[in-house]
Amino acid sequence: PVATTPTRSDAEFWKIADSKLIRYGGSWSNVRVKSAKGAVMFDQNGKRILDWTSGQMSSVLGHGHPEICDVVDNYMRNLDHLFSAMVADPIVDLADALTKLTPPGLDRCMFLSTGSETNECALKLAKMYTGGHEIVSLSASYHGMTHGSGAATFSVGRKGYGPQLPGNFTLSVPYAYRSPFRHEDGSYDWQTELDYGWDLIDRQSCGALAAVIIEPIVSTGGIITLPPGYMKALKNHCEKRGMLLIVDEAQTGMGRTGDMFAFEHDGVVPDILTLSKTLGAGLPLGATICTAEIEQVCHDRGFFYYTTHLNDPLVCAVGAKVCEIVVRDNLKDEAARKGKVLKDGLLALQNKYPNIGDVRGRGLMLGIEIVEDHERKTPADALGTRISARCMELGLSCNVVQLVGMGGTFRIAPPLTITEDEIREGLAIMDKAFEECLAERANGV
Ligand code: PMP
Image (cartoon, rainbow, N blue to C red; front, side, top):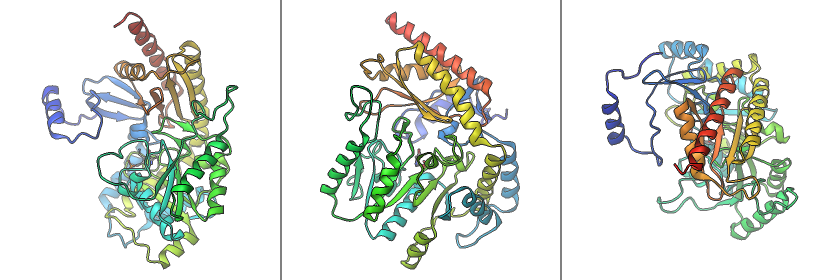
């Protein structure tokens, strides 16, 4: 593995990290990462850490995929970035490759750098196309950090910046495990919850609803899978009301859930699809994809949206290669197959530990929620944080999210190229971490 900054001592490294970086809102992990390859990272001392987060829930190909390295090397040397009005082969190649993967209708692409930008673009298209400005998203949503995408993000980051964009409304996330609309027998009346939500929105709306934006699996909100029929109900509602359905597949796209795009599982075609993290194999690349009709109407009305890195050839070449590899190596089926191995392992851990209240998700996008016990489901946030820290010490990186009223939820989304041995290795580490942390707690440590 190649060292990053080998000359600095750990003490100096942390001193600079702690005093020179703007903190993002949380605290830094105490690992000084040196290199990464496939599903594995190495710290400064050569310790091996399995990466069950694919970076920030991003690359489906793992770190440093050799074919991606070649594309980056070639395009950096020969054709990296262009003025935004120019086109080149990799841009057209990616548009062609992606629209062969999307269902008919989703035909027009714009390539940007981040998920926030793709959603900002999608929201602007929806506003211009419908003439409305009001946006609906879920209460545990995450769609980005820019002003429009941030206003549609209800899970984190809303406080302290003055008024959010007006006209952003929220539906309660359909959280089958804890919803107040869950019955004693475990059945879940999400339709009544949704009707109730629309009723509240209609009371607040000024009659200018433009779009619903939704993730098919709500990731930052705790890997919440939508109940069967939920996305279809949203789509029907949008059609009736002249609204658009925007599906944000930043994390779920490119095979991660066992389908090429997770909306396929719900039997729904969105009006606008956004892709980012999983499309770029670790590089900043996103796509907003819409119907030809939306593109035409918005163009005629003066749609204007570009960034410095619009349609950059280098990252588009990477995206085209990602499409090729995902199809060639059948990675969506691999995600389904390996996802079953991982989920079976997590279910076995749930059998062993009453503190795993719920196992959810699809393909290689899974979550486990940490509770005090299976019956009362009391959230056990501190325990979740402790177990994830212990996992990291033992060589497994997984992310834990905590929202109000929810036990700490592990988000598990390894690269689709992970091996079954690496899955079993991670499960064994998790088992050990649970055992040790529960013993520690029982002993009052
Ligand atoms: N949408 C979803 C579903 C995301 O998870 C994220 C990032 N966590 C974003 C959008 C924003 O993407 P970015 O951080 O690349 O702006």
